[in-house]
Image 1 (cartoon, rainbow, N blue to C red):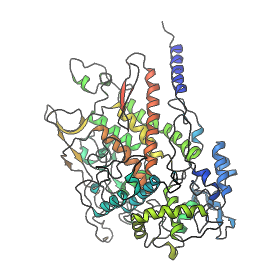
Image 2: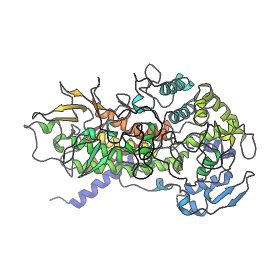
Image 3: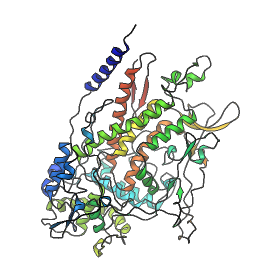
Image 4: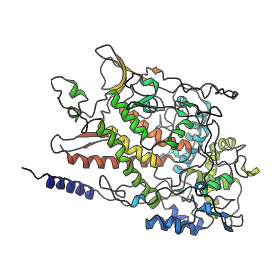
Length: 636
């Protein structure tokens, strides 16, 4: 007779030893915080502190020192008792400060700055994973870092392309705006020697098919959007994947999103920018549709639509949706345990099919819980990187530093000479390739909500998709991307990632669209969002302009030349969600790239520990990583 209590304790000890045996890395930042400490910390995250009205810079560097001290101490109360919130202080042009008293709902809070100090009882500790230093401002030669110049150009160009159709981000679709952005990016020095985070290229250059796609296997194949951002599944009343409705029990999740007003960007004026940097809460964005009643909805069709999705999503919802779609399709599980799950090649053979299948173990409830369970672990780990380690400024702030160069700001107690010296050279790179000329055009007549001035016209501010700009936490790593890396890794571990998307007819003659192992005679299939009509003037109430009127359309299947693999579409889903944040203007490419891989390590660590808990049938699975390698997990 066994002692279950002692055996359970032994398993917990084994998991603890596994966790303790992982090397705790050295956390390294890029040095810009210390390097520019005497220059108002202009390369660090300062949002929420008092800012100067004419420069958009930190007014008093001592506020950053207190902010950093509160982060390092790890307690919440000092962020109120010791750190001055910018909404509570108004700064005059001469730098003098006077108290202000905004209503509590009119300003924003820093978001979970101490989360990285909490411990975990499953998976890697929040400080047992890390990210490499973000691209610093300067390279080894003392000049602006070509990688940082390139990622700032990417964010600028995504703002220029925010209302272009995602269907045009493909080879063979002529779109002058996208072609122009690709050419400008290819003309930057980084593309001649891309020694940092790699992009997908063809013949050594970006193309409409590869630009802004991400970095992992399969993301460059087929439409820009992952199929999991468009399709639905059948429910108890039938339906079709092309309806874009996902079964959630007897409820349905609609893949269509509200349509944010085309061409409406934010934070394009100094007063608006400074108000947001002080942490004041602006009015929400506007949406297309009738003046009264619900906003117009449509399938994700433009970068602005994707930005809207990642503005309001519950961080794991796209991956929960993908899991629900795959379960409804009967997608086979990893071949190493499909005889246990009851779904896969092993279970389909009547000679080997078990009379017991998966549910609490190896089945739907198991994977649905796992795919969401990793999200909080990912968020705690990335909070440590954001606040305690890198404290990197957001793209909106880097653009504001460039704007000071355009305004011919003179060095003074309010504008550091180091900023002007380095940002002048930085700006020259983006002028030479034409990116800043595009931004000037986009900002030609900015819709200032504050007190606009003639200097605001043709600025180099980054046009933002959200009125409040970025969240109230530093840029690197990215919460969305870390959660994407963790959740998608769980999905890739559980399902057979070699499956392809096909139009299939079963033995009873019933047609369906599903991910399944390839068989001779299978027909590939893919979906896109409905095409955008040409832009036309708005029509009168209650009419909805045809450019927005796509909400009731269903998806149309296409037969591509190449099969879409499950691995590729899951990698693409992670890239879509992560880079959708770049489309909004709140993240850089490196935020996506490195955060994704940290999230992957967190998920693999949790799976390794869970694999210890199966005393009879071993839970063994394989995970194709975001770099294309395969990690095998579980007791052999």
